[in-house]
Length: 480
Ligand code: N01
Image: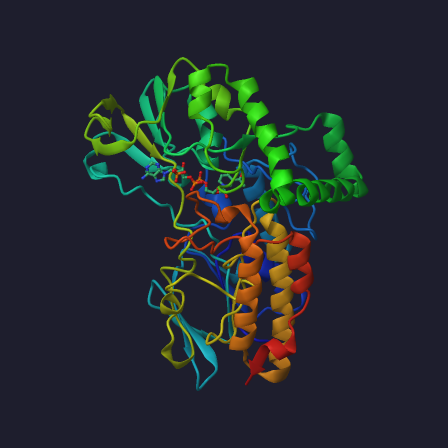
């Protein structure tokens, strides 16, 4: 009999899992989604200019090429429409439970089942749980004193208030990561005045190419071979040019020079340029890929504020020295809770082991997918599977294929749990590879937990991950 599967999350990961199950003829699955629509991060992030800085042909499922991309980089509405199309084409709608937040999953050892609980109090039993909750799903507000006293309008970039008109207003943006870099150029021409509060400068490299011309669009639409060739070309470029910069000083120098040149070309004012020059090696934090951010900062109505913020006051933001800069609107582009992975879902495995407790020192999983003491629980985009250089869809597809292999094994041999020895060997290899990466350098990034351990990123080429997840090794698991 086919196993029953609970998939948590209807983003790129959860939907990919659902499609592969359907393709294998398994229909005994449910996709739980806390929001009122599918799409995950591409549903949540609707800020002006929201787009993907990974090329379109790589940022789609390999089995479902999208031939109508408007340009080299997909915009958020296109990505959301693509996922909606996939849900329709692969018959996922009847399996989707929207507005249904999973709050807990508890393993019942006697029955070898996961009891899944939702916020509405419903409890259902499944053989298998697959988490597709992502790494960037819970917005993080800065712990700046006085935020609650602000009298204007405030919101997080991932919860954009489209009902609030920014025209002519004094707008303050806190944060300058990839999200801020995308929306600042869009709101700067509209706002009366814009203050960008920068705690740490980011390295920025240019985005090559833009919208497709009619000929390119038609060519990709009608000649599938061209699209495959483009996908392969981009894949090779990021693996051979960008990835080495993360692990090798010489390659890093080349990319650093590209970023420095980009800054020199786009910012003429030496003081502003100095303020925008990072003091840590490129790649340590996620590199911003953008052509419009720097020019926006040079506008007459935009100020880059580098004085540390001391507090938010009812009428604006106070910086060191007591200066208050007035603001009508406060936008937090302050990122996400990234290192506590499945939280706040209460996951309890065998012998009452709580996942939150197991991960106290930092989240980890064998291949980023499975954990000892948590049988038949599999993770998509789990610990140490984020990329600093390529499309996450490649990692998700590898994981889904691996989990499909696990389902075949557990149908034949019963519930499966990764062995502690496999987990320990994995940890040693991972940490050894991690030692060589630039993420270990001294910088603060969302890739690391509070103790400074890199819990989010995969330290080797995508091709290596694809190879080692080709199929589960039986000896890494115990069954029954
Ligand atoms: O968030 P971030 P993001 N006081 O965490 C600052 C993906 N993404 O939403 O650097 C003052 O990068 C913080 O400062 P510092 C991508 O993986 C992908 O922009 O910590 N400032 C930083 O500047 C990306 O990396 C796309 O010193 C505070 C900013 O807030 C990830 O999402 C597009 C502060 C947070 O930056 C997250 O990006 C967009 C405080 N108390 C995003 N707290 C694609 O195109 C935080 N900051 C694929």
